[in-house]
Length: 321
Image (tube, rainbow, N blue to C red; front, side):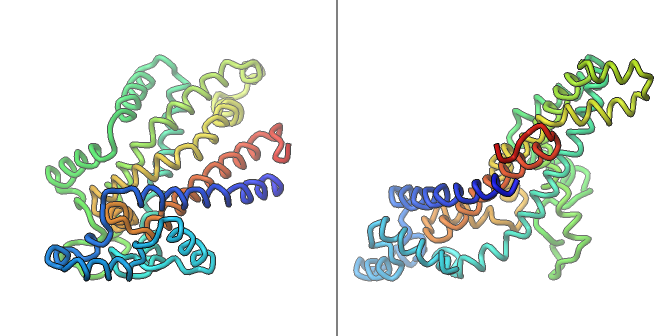
């Protein structure tokens, strides 16, 4: 396990290095002008000399390779630079928002895994039954539904029609303090929508895996020995059938990040989504590079977690092979 983890960490370095270089290269080719984005409406009446001076102050008059190298050497010392669009250090931008994004993603992932596993097991136990047909149809429908569309639908129904849940934000409109109760009530809709957007994959994997395991000889032998159906299902079929699902955890991280950006935007959740959109449209090199590295690192960690979980669940898998 330690050897495999070490290899993954060493291989992550070149990947992150290439990602940051690609971010600066793509941003340099972008049609958006970071100087005009930074100056705002004042840039419309500013002279060309003022704009050139501002371009030099921001460091965007240099070749993108030089800008990338300056950012990289500073980042290795802990200095991620300053965000030109948010007018604050990049480290502060991430620190203020990453906790809320992590809370949303964790809650959504928990909903998707727990609910998807439970429905998948029940559907596999009675394949072809009414629950299996209904759940499978709903899963394929949700799989094709965009996360932002689900978010808008949830706001219309639960917030506007029923008035049961807040439509967005982190706190109530009249409140100037953040309390756990308000956070939980405002988290329900975005976490539920993001979780539902990920649920079909877990449901379908568990349903297929457990269904196949129920037809295997070891499970048939357990039933022939008179073991209770619950024991057969949880002790034999579920453990064997969930192995493919463990590999799905890491592969869903990129989709989870993309979905979180859309859901945070729809529900005005104070995570890193708004910062990411602003960094991309304003060609904010330091912030865009830092957020891209953060997302890439999350994907790499998700893949490592999947391999570790699979190896722990199935002793036949060698970590150091």
